[in-house]
Length: 167
Image (cartoon, rainbow, N blue to C red; front, side, top):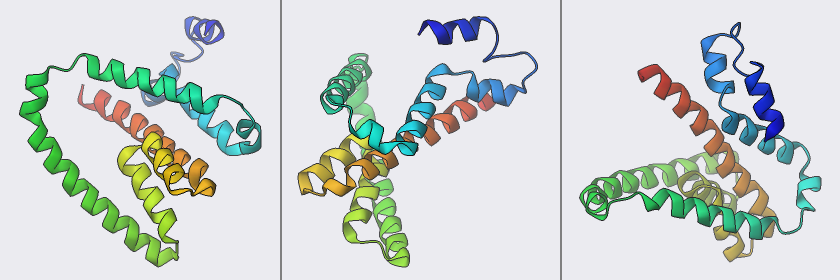
């Protein structure tokens, strides 16, 4: 985006006077663009609801992302690491589902909301949206997708922050 590149070149995003932690978190243009997009879609859901073709475009883009992520994988490395990843994921899933169900019981959420929230936190926005669509819970499509996206945003900021601390 030319406008954002100009801001970056003029030092508006990575200004010298800013504290290092602010430059670290707000200097990453992809984190900022994602945060602004999610904030706008949360604040103005009716506007974004009327965008036609978003589902198809999103499906194409997420498929391209999956291809890009998997393209560099070496099959022997994947096979070697798979048991540990599976074990970790199993423990994480059991704790996640149990925790979400306990919180849901405390707040008197219905079971559909609990399953959608758990799916969004375990699999992200794409699997959460696919799950609620397959179950016919149309009213939960946007909330499940947004919960998954909020997790991505929070996790991305935390990951960038943590990586730079330990770098």
